Every structure is written in C-alpha cells, then in structure tokens.
Length: 230
Image (tube, rainbow, N blue to C red; front, top):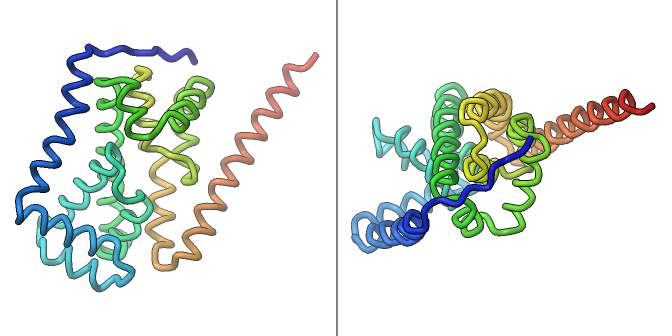
C-alpha cells in the first residue's frame, strides 16, 4: 500500500503545536483544575483499587465520561499507558461496564489521533511519539496497510497510538482504518478487562496474544512466499 505524505498548511501546524500546550498550561494554572488533575493522576496510578474506585465514584455520572476523555487525551498526548487506563477502568467499574467504557474510549481516541495526524501531519507525530517510533509505524503501515492497523491492535506490545497518528498523517482511508481499529480492539479489550485483576496474568495474556498474532502473520507470509516461488 502506497501512503501519501501530507504537508498541511504551515500556520495550522504551528497553531496546533503552540495552541494545545498553551491551553493545557493555562488550565494547569487554575488552582481547582490543577488540584483535580493531581488528585486524578494519583488515583488512576494508585496500586490500591479502593483509591481508584473512590475517586471515580465521587465523580458520579461523570466518572465514565472522565475516563473516556482520559482515553482520548492519552491517545493524542500520552500521559498514562493505555493498559494502565484499561486496568483502572476495569477495577473501578467491573468487567462489563468497564469493557464498554474502555472500548468507547479506544475508538474515540483512535478518531482523535487519526484526525490530529491528518490535520498536522508528520511534524506533530515526531513531537508526540519521536522520530524512531514514527518511522517504524510509517514503514509498517506502508507495508501492511489496513491489515497492519488490525495487527497492531491485536498485538498490545506495539504502539497503537503512534499508528493512529501515522495513519492520519499518511491519509489512510478513514473508514477502513476505523473498521480495523474497531475489530482489533474487541479481543484485546476483553482480554485486558478479564485479566486486569492480576498484573502477572495480564502480562502473560497480552504477551501470549502478541506472540500468537505474530506467528499467524509470519505463517501467512511464509505460505505466500512459498506459493510465489517458482
């Protein structure tokens, strides 16, 4: 698949690159907002499930919305690892409600990352994920196309957030991108929510899934090479 290298208007790149940090800094200077963010970060990164649950319960009906917003923010401006956010949500809301919150946040985060990458292009991608990660994600997307999006989603050890930005910057068609994202996010989200009660089980489960997907992809490549051989 041949991807398009975009070059958005210079003023738009600088507007977003300068505007987003300025807005975040401005919010951080508001005492109430700053205290809430500090409290939220401490609760979401706490190793005690009771602390996390108490924080989201205090938010009431806004708790799920706050977590979904956190997934969207994490997708475009990584603050917490996605797996941490997923495990926290599952611990706070249980496997069923937690799954739907995580899944909604994952899809909306993918949309945000895609359109941010498409609007600003490679300039912002380099800033957010670094040149090495951007280059690897771009090469992977160029080689595998939409199938690569599905593979990345099914292999948690890879960076789906970087791929979202790269897919947008390279103008990958939006509908196939979202279909692959939606399909790939289901089994991983189910697995993480199910195994989130044990960090050791979670690591083994995600590692096993990544290895399985890699073996299947490698097997398909080997069969294709064998069929193409004279």
